[in-house]
Amino acid sequence: MKNTFIADLPFGKKYEEKLLHYLPNIFSHSYSSGKCKAYDVKVITNEGAEILYEVKADRFTARTGNISIEFSCRGEKSGITTTEAGYYAIFVVQNTPKGKEDDLYIVETDYIRKLIKDSKYHMIMDCGYEKKSRCYLFSEKLFTGFKI
Image 1 (cartoon, helix red, strand yellow):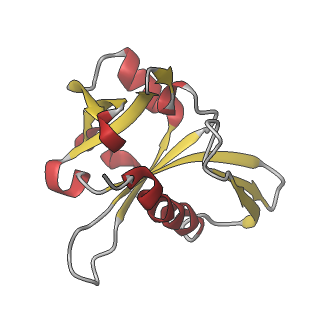
Image 2 (image 1 turned 90 degrees about the horizontal axis):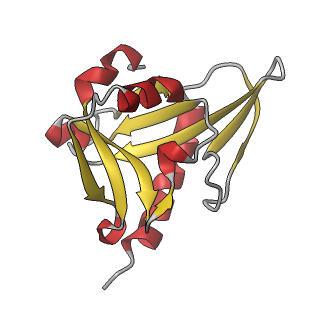
């Protein structure tokens, strides 16, 4: 069986880089190498502020109207439970012919944690490579105010 996690790494890195095109006033930036649970992208603004982002590119949201947020992988805490990022950058990947731009939501991590605390998800499900992760499933409508 093909390891889709390894195959998807370039896909994920593409969206980490794509995020930088949406962020104004960037002085410098750095990426984790995919081995960092704390964040995916670190941006240092011209004013010297450090901003951490968790980047998610979801191929299913456009079809299902749902956004999944990982909280564990292989029985270990991950995603929303381990991130130090202040923001989630969630790309809704459009599976349409060229010309349709992906949607992007930039959401404060604390907002997502509050949704979880208030049980605003409608399901917990197995997700990810080989269904080894666990995710909260939210209606995309909960994130519309954060669309860029």
